[in-house]
Length: 356
Image 1 (tube, rainbow, N blue to C red):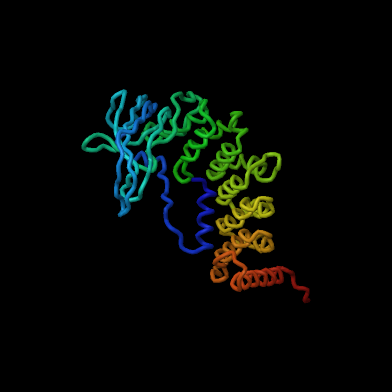
Image 2 (tube, helix red, strand yellow):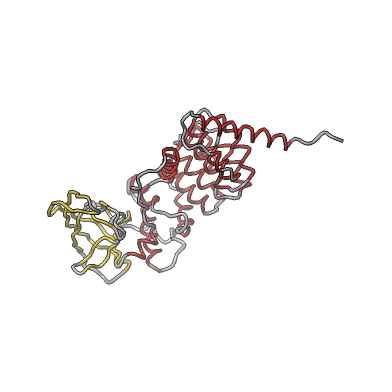
């Protein structure tokens, strides 16, 4: 799931109140490595349905499919060596360790890193939500190393990143990038910096902005001009949700850099990018963000105004003056009026006194 999808879901939840909690966090590469007893890399040769029926999970009945998968194993990264042709069975749906229902499986023809747990009868997916990650059968070579060690985590990270310089289609490369975790996978930074030189990466807005966002989050300021181009040059044709992801990454920089960038982004033509800029100004934890937010109170999009007032309330600890919905009701009008008055008072205090 993209950063923007998560942010949008959170904003919607704020507007409508409680929401059904069906979103389950995807495990990171490091978490998958720690969870698995065995990690293999190889081609999924066949996946065949062997049965069907019903299964009751968490008090609810689901249609069940039983599958038999065959993998041509090219490498065993963790655990005891497995046969060159690894065969195991699994059923969908199933549950993870805490009872969340999942439909994870494998697709014939894919080349994947597969995370397995030992069972009394063989193997099962270590995580039914993320049973595997994309990989490449061909290494990028010795000049494309991950900043790494010989452990299983770094080997998996390398296998996933090798997809980016392979002949895989763009969707697979995008999936490989989506696996990276901002808090755990900064070892990928040197590799991603090299990948930025590839023609297909530079030409694809999703790949390009995702890598720029990763590098920004890991404090590589050399990509700031590239981020600026994707945010503000119409010729880049960057969609609003991609701009929002870039702005989220930029919000973690020093406020001297992040606040001017995010404030400028409040003028972008895409409403979803302006919503992102408004929300992420809060993440700078800086009073210098207030003036830009106050100026954006007049944005023509109610969702932007909503985001502005959420950030103003959180930055100033005036939580009461955050509206609960975007409806034009008495509460909304009172919040708008409060922040306009707050802005007038702030501007008055900023004007130098003319008294002698």
